[in-house]
Amino acid sequence: MRACVLHAARDLRIEDRPEAPLGPHDVRLRVRAGGICGSDLHYFFHGRIGDFVIREPLVPGHEFSGEVAETGAEVSRVRPGQRVCVNPGRNCGHCPRCREGRPNLCENVFFMGSASKFPHMQGGFAEHATVRDTQCFPVSDSLPFEEMAFAEPLSVALHAAARAGNLMGRRVLVTGAGPIGQLVMLAARRGGAAFLAMTDMMDAPLAAARRMGADETFNVGAGTGALLDAAGAMGGYDVVFEASGASAGLNAALMAVRAGGIVVQVGSLPGGETPVMANRIMAREIDLRGAFRFGDVFGDAVTCLEKRLIDIRPLLTGRFPIEQASEAFAAARDREKHLKVVIAF
Image (cartoon, rainbow, N blue to C red; front, side, top):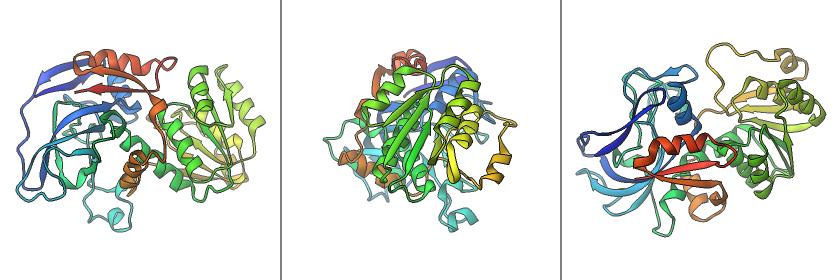
């Protein structure tokens, strides 16, 4: 099978790779669509994301969908020919975090397309992928593969919204209008948020946010000082979701949230130390919460997609065949033109 393989920063090759053996509970998929995530972009352009560094050839991709090609002897959850959304994570079910109902914090997690462990956990940007049957969520034939690939990022957004708690009637700000930020906005609206604002450094994604229902947007592209000034002026939000992955974004969130409010860190911050206005957390009793990947919400995300309870179609802005995978990564980085770019297999 052909696969997209990252050897180092900006070194992506289309290579032939052998099929993985099929175990009794395994499912072999014909991958049809894979969405390029922000973490994939970091791996492609920098060879790392945060503290996770590529140390061996890595097949990226954890946002993908396909159809069942073959099943192991003991698989009954899916059958050949079915369309499935794929949960890229497998938790052990036995460690303390799994037992307390937080599978995304599993101490033995397997998460596809990640360099967080060595050997790396290979991803789904290939013509075929072999996964466990429990990772497969069947959908009807009416849902396009490209939309099915949104199940994973939508799960991230639903989990972030759940980490914030009750959003009914809340004033909410999202910093960072990339795909995850936009999905968080949609998830917050579904959770009952009464007012939604968004910041970004570029006009195009903010315009997209307004089209999808943002009540107010702020361009903070004049630099960190302008960002903090704007955050001070915007102060009074009940909940702020930090989805930019920038230190300045986190500090802006701490400035913009009301006393006693909640900040949810969704974006992946740079590796190493991050300067944070920590005294503000103390003096205003701000709850700072992390949102890492997602818990048991993948099935909910699939339902939202299939029933169009959350309409992600405006986010899909680019499609490229596998032969143009490098061009797809370059396009996905162009935030003036694109939100979510999908590779077709």
